[in-house]
Each structure stands twice: as structure tokens, then as C-alpha cells.
Image (tube, rainbow, N blue to C red; front, side, top):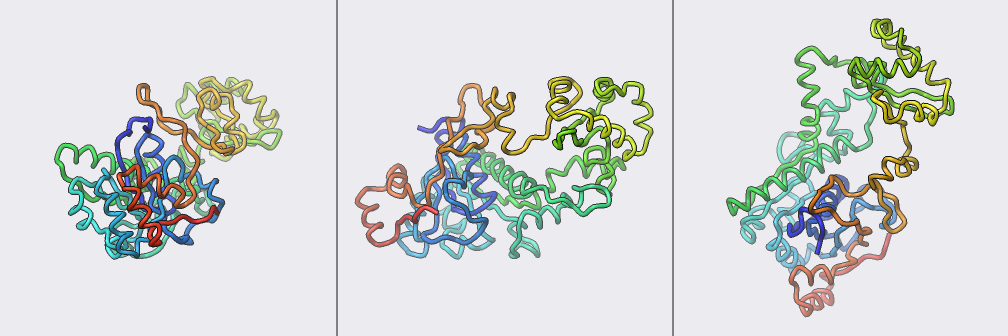
Amino acid sequence: MNKGPLSGVRIVEFGGIGPGPMCAMLLADLGADVIRIDRTEPHGLGTPRPDRYNILKRSRPSVSIDLKHKDGIEAALKLIEQADALIDVFRPGTLERMGFGPDVCFARNPRLVYGRMTGWGQDGPLAMGAGHDINYIALSGVLHSIGRKGQPPTPPLVLTGDFGGGAMYLALGLLSAVIEARTSGQGQVVDASMVDGSASLMTDYYGRYAAGLHSDERGTNATDGGAWYFDTYLCADGKYVSVAPVEPKFRALLLDKLGLKDRQPALDDLPNDEARDVLQAVFATRTRDQWCALLEGSDACFAPVLSLAEAPRHPHNVARGTFVEVDGIVQPAPAPRFSRTPSGMPTKPDIPGQSTATALAAWGFAAQDIDTLTRAGVLGARAAG
């Protein structure tokens, strides 16, 4: 039995890349019974890697079903009949052409929540075009806002479009609709767009912009590198630290510890580049570890800038168990945390189709039916990548 607050929630995931697997991972980490339907042949999308390192696919079984075969379609619909929610990761209209449109699925399962994850959304003039994270956050105003003054926009990995604006909003939408369906007995379609989600993440900044408190020129604002007190600084060993004493009392503490107590009024009045140069000259006099010894844990709003190799070893992250090791791969632990229904340890990603027989049996398929579908080539498994 799965551990976590979503234990008992059943979700069918159509295998894809990026935000779809991320959403399914989040739900599986929290205890949902997620079954991933993978293609019988590789889809050729995304960045290839060995299966064991594709950890967005952790904590749930993979079944391989030929969805071009009528018996494969029926097998998938039998799973959908039992599900609370479905994750669709394809362009608008794709699942309809495959035989799994909302009307078909609702006819089999009226309480199903049909979650659709796209970049542009289910409608609008761009809906059918291909794209990736950077394109979607470009349209929502996010990308323009990130970067240094006078420099081109900086892509923030795929955290804001795929994962923040996509996966997180789809997870929120699915769970909201599942809760509603348990009262009404009726499902619905959830249209999660990465443009919409990343725009929503910018809500506070749109409010600041309307109030004249946030400039549309990147790198000139309080939290985009335009303020000396919300930035990173190079240390004597070539490593970086971050400071963020936005409030005056925290700023005063930082400057006191840096030996700049008498400079605070003057620093606040200086152009940002000049004030930043003053702090940079001080931070360059010690190593990152030396600054940690002086500032970490204080109200100076300080933290070392850690690499992916360093972050799992930091004492705070170790104490909280922020990272775990699964199958020899260090990775983030499930989040958030729950006092009464904690999540279990993640399990390693399935090879596509690895759990076809066992997962289908757990979802009520008879052994004879599984054997018949396997011999007919409807069910299968691919070799590990």
C-alpha cells in the first residue's frame, strides 16, 4: 500500500516528457497510485538518457500498451474506468484521434478528472504549434524579466514553465477537481497551460509594475539583481555567496558583520553598481566557508551558493533529509512533508513497460487476459535505455 496523503487516489498517466512526468512524480511521491502508459516504441522527444537517471519517472509502474491496436485502446480504457484522474501530455486533439477524448473517457467514467498539459493551452492561435519552456515563458512576460541590466534575458532552466507553471499547476488543478468530483460525482477537463501558469507565477510582479514599483527594464529592480542587497558575491576562493537583507534591520546586521556599519546610509544612496562594488571588495577578502562561519544562521539573510554536488551534503539539508539516495542516485526527497501521513521513500524509475503484467494485475486485469494481450503483441516492454 502506498504511503502518503494521496494513498487511494488512482491516476493514469500517458507517458511524455517534462511537466507531465513531473506532475505524475509529485502525485506518486505523495502516495497516489499512478500507472504510466508508455509507447511500445520510443517517442524520440526530450533529452535521451539511461532510464535509471530519468528520475522524474520514479515511484510508479510503467506499462507498455500498443495504443494503435483496438485491444490496446480497450485495455487503456479499462484503466481509465478505474481512475480518479488522467494526465494528457499531448498537443490538443491528439488523444481524441487516438480514441481517448474526454467524451469517450467520461462515458466510461463520469467522475474522471481529465488533466491536459500543454505549453500554449487547448485553444488560441498558437495552440497547435510546437514549443518548449523558454517559448512559453517568453510569451507570459517571465523571460523578459530575468537577467542582468543591459544583458539578454537569462533562461531560468525549465523551472518556471515546465515545472512551476506547468507541472505544479496541473497537480493543483487535478487535486482540486478530484475533491470537487467526490461531492458532485462529475468529472471535468483541467486545461493547464505553461503560458497561463508562468503568468500566474508573475502575479505579484504585474501588480508591482502597475503600481510603478517594478521597472520593465530587467536588472534594475529589488529582486532581479538591481539591488546590492539582493545579489550574489564572489569570494576569495572563486565561490559565491547570496545575500538578501531586504528589510533595513537585516541590512544593518549584515553591514555590521561585514565591518560596514557606518556605510549603510551612504550605500543606500549610492547607485547600485557602486554600492555593489563596495560589498564585492569585502566579500573578496575571505573564502566562502569563512563567510559561512561568520554569517550562516544569522538574520543577515545569507546562504552559500551551492552546486548540485554540494547541496546534498550541506548540514541543514542532511539534517532535514532534503535529499535521498535511490539506486545509487542522489535526488530530492518528496515534498512537502506531512505530520500524520508522511510520504514513503521513492522507488527507482521503471524501464518502459517493465511492470506491465504486475501493474495491470494490480488494476484488476485477469492473468489470462494479460497473457492473451501479450501474445497478441498488444502489451510489451522495451529494453533498458
